[in-house]
Image (cartoon, rainbow over all chains, first blue to last red; front, side, top):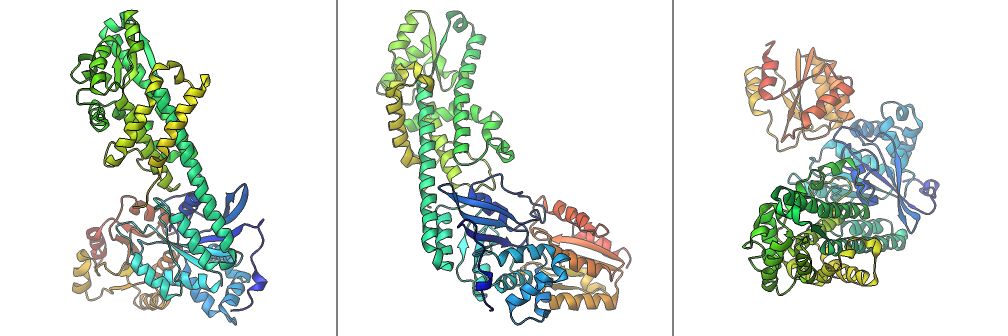
Length: 473
Length: 127
């Protein structure tokens, strides 16, 4: 190889410069969206050759760019280019690359490849993104040869490793045969726990001079993840306090008319659900997703499905079972057994049912105000503990999913009540903890905040935090 | 009939086209992984044979690229008619992606054939 010093990377405010290269549609832009948590970066499409130009995006640490990534067009014609490079009369492979960049072909049929190669000469290192589902073909071997000719450290990033069609072992062997022994596994769409930190650690083995800075970046990412989790838990805790405090009076005449009573219950469910949805949107923002992002249109709370799932009597019955409030919460007590009022306790009937259910559930419900209102001829709607349990479980699930999810794609994020019964006891304690909010209807709105409410939110958030940590499988 | 950049585990020729490969002695049938010397050899064979019809079989789930376009364009210049058949475990959007790519790569005259039976009928049309 000829003198590398001539081509020392251009300084970019101290940021480490990384070119992200690979075959067309290997997932380069998706990887960058995930690494920078910018769901809107570039264009991701199934179409061939979506990225046409080199685009820069920074990973910032404490306000300053720490890594400057360059998204590059796909290497699409590597067989012909490698043939062309080999035919050039140059003393070394790197010289052949330079000769190519000065020649006419770099502006003609290899224009796209030239953009990639030119950027390669200019960076500290490259991520070579590989779609592991692809068979290892001569065109890929030519890509590897071309990249190696640029004399920059190359870190292969094996994408889609968990796909059923993954040929990871074939790729590992092919890369090792070309001297690329350090390899990172990273699924851009559904990254696994710790894989981002591992990526920077692996990169440090290729760039020993930058080891300390890369460690600093990894530590920053860990701090950010913890901060996001804490913000998410505070948002969920605030919502739970609000839902627990939530109550609406139902006048006698409305209560007496079945149609109007049903409407009142429905409106109350919608009110509660609106708060839940606003918190889900806040969680998206905390994790760097935009709630107007087109991909989010598929999320369950956009079409009303989530609301009906959340207030579905069967879902709530199961939640009640897991919460251990006794089999009979409402079910055997008239009004609350009505399918239309699932998750909501209603008026005098519920006060009676609540009194019985309250005994069954070790006095969780507070009936002072309710009984008083009944004496006054006012009926009240409140939310059942099963619903709080369910909301907490689902939003924690969403938080973990967002923590895990790449910024390249979003599928269905909200899980139903399933598995993970390990969370039941801690969630039960949290629902217990929230109960004082039932005697503070003013806590529905954080505006009229009080130190007592704040302490309750803090305490609930602290108990939620360990439940929001995503554990490696 | 040329298999181009197919995964090694795919059978060659595709089952529905086996009869063509064996029964019609005039049919040239081969698969190449896509190395430069293979491309050169096949293009030379096509230039010598100047076949009436060329059927190129590609891996549908993979992304079409300019390397494939380059080969297809050169191969096409030696043949009267060119057809493209996609093989492999296809997803719903694969055929559309290749169709769009053909149109965008000035390869609109290449017939995208829906399946192996269609390809067979297309091959036999002039035999």
